[in-house]
Structures are given as C-alpha cells and as structure tokens.
Image (cartoon, protein in one colour):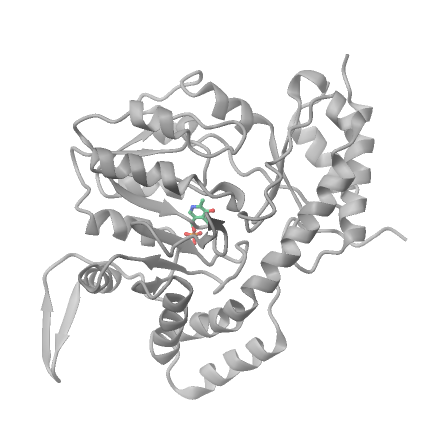
Length: 381
Ligand SMILES: *Cc1c(COP(=O)(O)O)cnc(C)c1O
C-alpha cells in the first residue's frame, strides 16, 4: 500500500482550541472583542512588553507600518526580490517605489551591503525578510538604519520565535510584522500582528485598522485618517490563543526535523551534483521552511518535472518564491531579467520540502529517499 500523501505543510490545531472556538461562537460576541485584547496582551509578553496590535493579515500590518512611518508618494523603500509578493505590494499600495537589491546566496536574505549602496535621498525605509525563519543580521541592519536615518519594517511573517543574538525577533528594533497564515509556524487561520515602538504608534495602528475611527464616551466619534477594514475576529483570536503556548514546542520539533533532513540529504551523491542546502542554523532559525536549491546545470529536466515526480511519489513541494521583480506589475516599473542575478538563480531553482510539527522522522526519510532517486535519475554530466 502506498504511503498517504505528505503535504508541504499542515497546521496542528488541538481539541482544546477547537472547543474554545465553539465557546466563542456560542458567546454572543464573535468579531473583535475580548479575545483580540487577550491575544494582543499575550503577544506583547512574547515581544518584551512592546505594544502589539493584531490584524486580519500579515500584509496589512506592513502597509499600516509604512503609513505610520509616513512613507508615501515620492519615497523609496528598499527590499528583497526573494519573498512573498506582499512584501513589495504594500510599498506600491502606499504610493512609494520598491527598490529591490540582490540577496546573500548563503542566507538567501537581503544583502545589507547592497542595500546601503541603493540608498538615495528619497529612501525612507527598508523591509528586510527573514526567509524561512532565518533571521536577517539585526546588528548590521540597525547599525545601517540608524546611520542612514531609515525606518525598518521587519517582515517577520515567517520568523515568529526565531532569535538574533539570543533575543527573540520582535523584542528589539523598529516595526516587526508577523503573519498567522495557516502555513506559518502558528496560525489564526488568517491574521497578523504588528509590534510597534510606543502607544502613539499603537493608537494610530488601531485607527488604520478600522476606518480611522476614534470613539469618545458613549456617543462621540471622530475620523482623522483614512483607515481600512483590517480587524481580526475573536474566533480567529481564540485560535491564536490556543496556538501561542505551543509555539516553542512546534519550533523545537521543526528544528529536530530539519536536523534529520541534513542527516538524510547532505550526502556525497547530492553534494557531488551541487544540491544547495539552507544554512545549518539550529540556534536562531525557527525552521519555518526547509528549502533546497536544485543544481540546474547538473539536471536534464526543469524544476517542474522534479516537483511532478515528487508529487507522483506522494510528496508535496512548493516554490517560495518566484523573483518579485520579474512579475508583470514590477516589469512595468522597469525591472528586468539580469537586474538581480543571484536572486534570479535561487528563485529559478529553490524548492521547499515538507516540514511541519506533526511530521515524523520516517516522513523525512521518505522525502530524502525519493529526492535521491529522482535527482540522480535526472543527473547530467
Ligand atoms: C505570509 C507572508 C506574508 C503575508 O502574510 P499574510 O498573512 O498572508 O498576509 C508576507 N511576507 C512573507 C515573507 C510571508 O511569508
């Protein structure tokens, strides 16, 4: 009998959380309310007491951070081409211009030396991304930001629970944006959180979150900024309250499975064909994803064929991500093939393997065995 299909990822929602959601649904208050407040308080504890507000995505969090920072038309924001397209769409959303710089091919994160070279008088902010949970160097990032007077919006959508220099992501720095999409290490189904610097920013974030509304007493209402509709429901917040206490356990399990991947795929045969592995970081990364880079020059089929054969063997994989600057919207702004060669090479060949807390060591062994079989069958030269 064939093994059941192994998906790329799957959330772990416990029965206590499911029961808790039932209680919220029966409570008479299902949209933003006490559960949202409770989740914000618990998250603030995780982020060293800094102000936190939750939202219905980890995209609007970045858009709102840009608005709070006063970034808009005529401004430039430096970011990486190797991310989910949300990272740069929010820059366009506020009317600013995204400026992509190439990546460090080892960490696959933004190259901060190149970021510095890209600064112009119009640059207002930088949005670095902790790809796969591997943190961007916070010391260099904030040394640069302070010296050049830039705001930082950390796209930490993938790095909840990662650390830098022993300190959890989000406990230091400027803005930190987290996502609770179901694929992330903890989920609220859809949702996100923004960690800010002070109560003034948090109050503004609340306004941008819900139509700009400020209430006073029983009947007073004012609107001073054009806000949107970005609030999280109490049903979603209850899911998050069940997930948050399990974050450390989930991340520890991801780390164990990542170690197992190294044991199984860092082999002489795959090294010989030049398979690219992620940094073996078992202290700082939360192992949001395990991503390999296929050796295109040594394979006689494209990535899609490898993915198709893994799928036929019962294994789900994903591409995170195609290079953002080569999407039509960004090409229309003038970006083209060859502008960012390191990112383009990685984006053409990157492949995400299954990794989630409910996986077993046997699942990892199966992925590794099928990967060996398929890559070696398509070896060239
Ligand atoms: C998931 C993700 C986002 C957006 O999060 P949503 O909650 O889906 O809006 C942004 N950036 C990165 C790098 C992500 O992985």
